[in-house]
Amino acid sequence: MRLNAITLICILLFIGAVGKSAQIGSHTWSPDAMEGPTPVSALIHAATMVTAGVFMIARCSPLFEYPPTALIVITFAGAMTSFLAATTGILQNDLKRVIAYSTCSQLGYMIFACGISNYSVSVFHLMNHAFFKALLFLSAGSVIHAMSDEQDMRKMGGLASSFPFTYAMMLMGSLSLIGFPFLTGFYSKDVILELAYTKYTISGNFAFWLGSVSVLFTSYYSFRSLFLTFLVPTNSFGRDILRCHDAPIPMAIPLILLALGSLFVGYLAKV
Image (cartoon, rainbow, N blue to C red; front, top):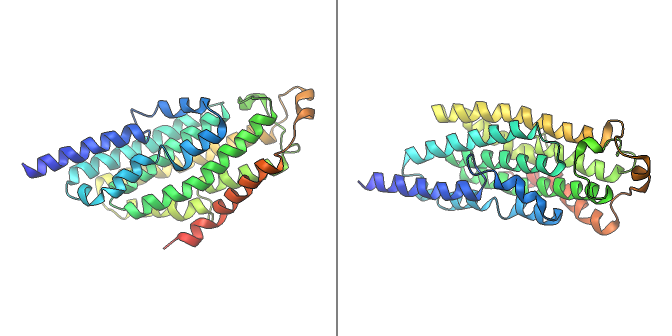
């Protein structure tokens, strides 16, 4: 009876984390939270609110280690979330919603890392994710601000010449997000997939394969957003492009600091 009770307790705690961390079935509020100002979105989706559920599971790890059933449920839910959010992200045209769905996908990685009993790696990815996701959101905010609050990527294009600094920052954030070797995201994302592969359980293999496919989709929507926003021929009016300007100094300083974090924090903090 004690085992049944602790299994129920852990699953109910996880259901709370599902709502808080935008997991499968309770993820729809997260992209809709993009309506707020971009700095607020960066805080909500990078370092504070949506990661609270993951952090709660990691802090309750002694409790979650008792019932294997709860860990299996956590692993399956996290893997399915990472896959669902990645496949949804490739179909979005709103710049901020693409980044929002990528947040849901990365939260899935953190959750299934907890499900395979690697809580420290999950929190490590949480910390790394905060840097490059905040960088992506603030870079997107810089573009949206200069484009008179236009968020549809199909109405942008050709902005690399007008926004060379913002383009460089967004490229760094995107490369870190997809786990490009030796950037911050690589050091945690690669370890999560490696640990899932070496778990040699049904849930571990399930998480590994869905996580690996999600990496492919993550690369696709990251580069799609870069191409549609910065590299394809412009779809805006000429007067809008001429009026555009790159990030001023007060907006550029946080981008530079976050870019440094997106490049080096993973290497400096790895164990």
